[in-house]
Image 1 (cartoon, helix red, strand yellow):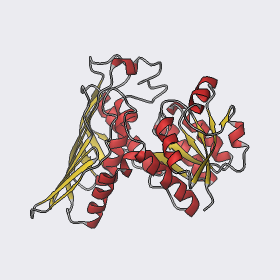
Image 2 (spheres, one colour; image 1 turned 90 degrees about the vertical axis):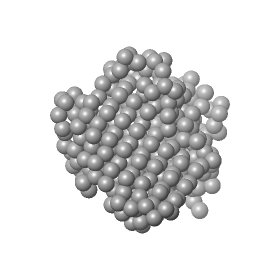
Image 3 (cartoon, helix red, strand yellow; image 1 turned 90 degrees about the horizontal axis):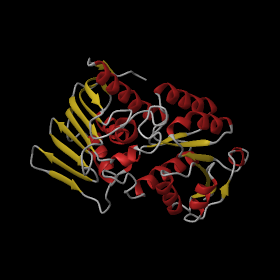
Image 4 (cartoon, one colour; image 1 turned 60 degrees about the vertical axis):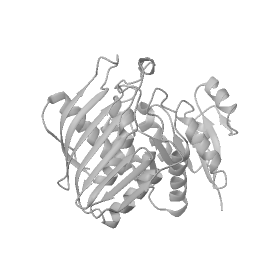
Length: 343
C-alpha cells in the first residue's frame, strides 16, 4: 500500500498525541514535514520525533508529493491556513475548534468543499471504543427512542492554565470551557442523541478563575426528536471528573462515562464495556490522556483520502457543535431561550 504523505503545521502543546499516533501508523502514513515558525519548538520536537523539519510553510505547500496537512496551530489561525491548504490541493485534518467564530469556521469549510479537498476534524471522543459501542446499540434500535439526555463535563483547570497569554480569550481561543474543552463531549452527545433545537440557561466566569470567557455553563436543552436534556460544563470542578452522557430511552438507559459504558434494559439485560485505557485530561494536566483516540482519528482520515469517502467527522459535522456552543453562550448572555441555528 502506498503511504499517505502528510505534513504537520504547528508543534505546540497539541502535537504530541498526533505525532505518537502517526508513529503508530508508519505502515500507512508518512510524515513528510513538520513546521513551526519557532526554531526552538522545531528543535524540541525534533529531539522526540524522527520527522523531517522545515522552516517555512512554502516548503509544505510547494511540495506536490504532500497530500494532506494536519493543522495544530492556535484556533484563530485555522481559517487562513486551511484556505492556503485548499488552494494548494492539500487535504486538511483540522484540530478542534474549526476556528474562533462560527462565521470563520463556515468560511473554512466552504473553502475546502469548493477546492474538492477532504476536511476532517479532530473530535476524538467519537472514536473511543465505548462510544462506538453505544452508537452501534442506538443504531440497532434496541433501546428505542431517546427521551432524555444529560451531559456533564466537570473538569479542572488551575489558574496557571489561564495565565498563559491568550488562553481562554475570545481573540485566540474563541471562548472558554465550551469551545476549548466541552466541544469534544458536546460533539459526541450530538452524534448520539441528534441535534438540539433550543437551549435556555446560564454561562458565567466563576470566582475560581480570572479569565475573559466562561468557565461554567448550565443549560436545559430540547432536542429535535423531542427529547429533553441538560448540559453542565465547567473547568472549576476540582480535581476534575470524567465526562458523562446519560441517555434515557424507551427501553432502557445508557451511561457513558469516559471510557466506560453501561447499558441497562428494562428486561434486565445489561451491556457493560470498560477499557484498559483512561480518557484523562479532566484534571490540571490537559494532555494527560492516551494517544490511541487521536491515532484512530488519523487512521480514519488517511483511509478517507485513499478511498475517496468522507471522514467520520467532517467540517459540516463540526459546524453543528459550533452552532450549539453559540446558542449556549447567547442564552447565558441574554437570559432567554435561544434557537440553535440550522446548517
